[in-house]
Structures are given as structure tokens and as C-alpha cells.
Image (tube, rainbow, N blue to C red; front, side):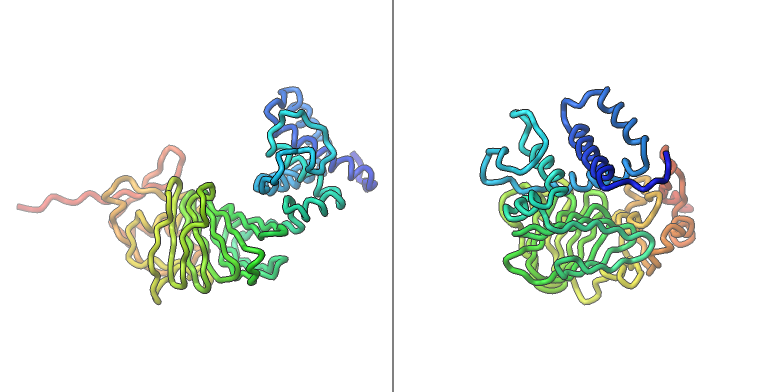
Length: 338
């Protein structure tokens, strides 16, 4: 391999090949021989892997495409040939991959509401990140957070893949802003709110305006409405979110100042908040340990050092599970002297 710059035709050929492999590897009839050929292609040039990763992101976005009114898949613009029995989702995603590479097809997809005209992938590493999206909305990402933003003709969509984000959404009643977090969905037109997610647990705090929260995006309806100073939380399998009131001393947004505030919480409640920042998540050994309470104000950049200090402030000792992750164990209580 040389360092000679690629021509536009060579670059386009790599893009086409990446789109082809993305579609074939997601197909149910992809063979072992094809997968081997893909590995050989992937290792043939550094740019192959870069283009394939870009196609995977487009695939993820296209997986959320709205179903068109017609069932005639041939009306979707795409250049690859498919078997008639191919499911609509695969054809739609294939169309998206191809259409995003073709300006005319992409323009048609935008007008039909099938394809976005803007796509952004955002990540925050070890610092809080503030970004203005292409629609004018602002988003602040907590440490280790990741999301994608796509702008469609009839709606704006965010998928929170991990972590936490604060949104200040530009008002557009005809163009709702929808955040997907775990199995649920938050729908707004213009407001300020925070979304925290750890594993399959989600918590939404509304600061200004109103939002509709659904714990399962597949259920009919837009969910429950929150007003200012209200909070919704849900986990996997919840039919409806749990709604509660927040108060002036609510500390859920302290991360924006680099802090995690634990206000006399049980370890069971505190660990999801702590584990969001840890390289190796903490666990508790039993119910007695989970019931112990913890408080304090912590720097979110220094929480990995918290594990070593916990035995100094709580009656616990640390062991390791089979995965090498730390486990908190309550100190055994001494029998009362007679």
C-alpha cells in the first residue's frame, strides 16, 4: 500500500463497497464466505474501516425511519437490487444508505419525510461538552455521554445512547423535538429539560415549558405530560413513567457545575448515579448493604477514587466479583454484650 492520494472515483468505489457490505452483513442470508470476504476487504486499506463505520451510523439512523404510507417499496429511491420478499425495514435502510450518497435521491427522501437533511454524532469524554445543533437547539453533554441528532422534515430526533444531557430546545410547534432514551421517548416543541440514563433506567427533569414522556415508544399515545419542577422516571418494562415533584433543593443538575450531590441516599439509590462515572461499576452484596445511606458532594471527574474511600466513611469493606468489579459488603454487626 502507498500513500498516493485516492482519486474521487476510487473514493466513491470505497463508499459504494462500504454500503454494500453494510447491507449484506445485516441480511439474514449473509453467508460465512461473504463474511470472510468482508474481513479481507476491511483489512485491505485503512479507509475501508473508516467508511464502513460511517455506513453503520447511517444504518442506525435509518433504523428509525418512519414507515411510508405506501407498502410499495419500489417507490423508495435506491440503486441496489433486492429480492421482492425483502422486509421493508431492510429496503428502507438500504435506500437510506444509498440515498444519502446521492443528492437527488436524498432530496426526494427529505421531501417524503423518510431521510434527514442533517445528522450529527456527539460524544463527551472527560469534560462536559456544550454544542449548538443545526436546528439552533443547545445541548450540554455530561462526562462519557453520547447521542445522535437527525433533522427530518416533520420532526427532530435525538437518540441518547449513553449518559446524560441537558437540552434547551428551539421552539418549533410544527417540528417537534423527540428524544429516545432506552425504551422510552420524550416529545417537546420548545423547552429546557434534562435526561439521565444508566443502563435501562431513565430520569427526565423538566426545567421550563412542558414535555410528554412515554416509557415505551411502541405504545400508542404521546405519554404523560410534565410541567416545570416535575420529574418522570422509568425502566425497562414499565407501562407508564413514575411522576414526582422536584423542589428548590433538587440537585439533579449539579453535574453541569462538575458535581454529584448525594443527599442521604441509600446505596441502592446512589449506585446508579455513581456508576455512571466509574470504569468498573460498584455493586452491593446484599439488602443490608443496599440499605446503608451515603451523602456528600463529589467532583464528577474524581469519582473513580470514591471506591477506595468508602470504607472510611461507611461501615463497609470491598471485595471483587468474578468480573473483577468492586462489591460493597456491610461490616458484620457485633453481638451485644450481655
